[in-house]
Image (cartoon, rainbow, N blue to C red):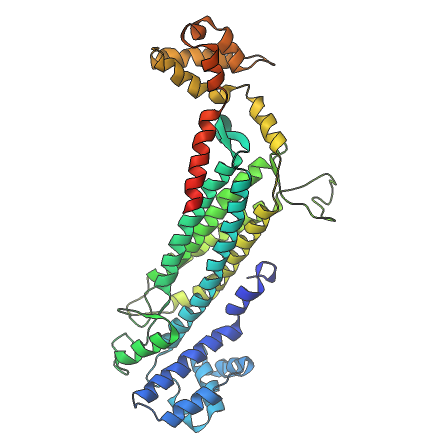
Length: 430
């Protein structure tokens, strides 16, 4: 991933240095367990733990000759350990180390994403509470529909975020799995008790049945979960982009001192964060597709997945971490224009209450078709400066069935606000 979108902590986890560190951790713990089981000398395991070091430049130099990255890595460790280096990678195949080390990186990276959820949920909750009763227009098809509050609008995204968190935690757990079952998963070189003990020490679960690799459906599920986070962020980002359009202008992204919106037009304040998050989501979905392609390997393994995973795992985690934090900053600094929301609310001339007027007339005895035609006629005949309440008050058919007090109650919005508060409180409790 490009440096621009890489936050330091997540970037470190997916660095080449940490990749080899986790691989070394696997090799060292395997040697420890093998020594405990009497497969290799205790002194060898101690020497491996103390002396096993690697130099990335040296690994690359060896790989130029071997054309095999794991062999180059093991050779570099062994030459630093000395005589006992022969016990490094004892009974293992490359995927035992690569897949188990990848699980360790996934475990580390997942903790950051887990914390990102906490931050984003917190800022969303604050915005919801602040604007629980901030009246705004609810829109369907981009057209004014019924009254709602900005707090309720945000609560819908908050609920989706909670669902995406649940999905991610489940997928993350499924991917934190190690394997040491050997070349085609038969434990022909090492007893499965070694795998059990090593995974326990590393804080990983064991793969129930591996081939030579951990089945890639686990990884695909994780990538799908990350892409779902991206899509949820994009849904919120697109909403905020729409609300920032000049014709709507109900919210504005925070604009810092000295910031410039356009090289040509000094007046511009563009929704750059929301647009950036939209782009990030597109990439996350593409990574999920690539991960699903990786599920299908030849027989017990091939390496068609390897080149893909070198790109998609670092990129997906780094990008998801970045997008979640950028969204948290966007929400925290979002300027909500209550007056503009009210002005837009009034622009529809009271038509936001048409459905409740319809229901009130049906309750008074009109058929639904009669009531619908009546309210539609009044709504479609409004002129500039007029509103649906006034039109209803002067209409003989409406007045025949509804008192003025009943009409004013319909157009007060009390029914909407009462339900909105209940919905929000229910959401914030869970």
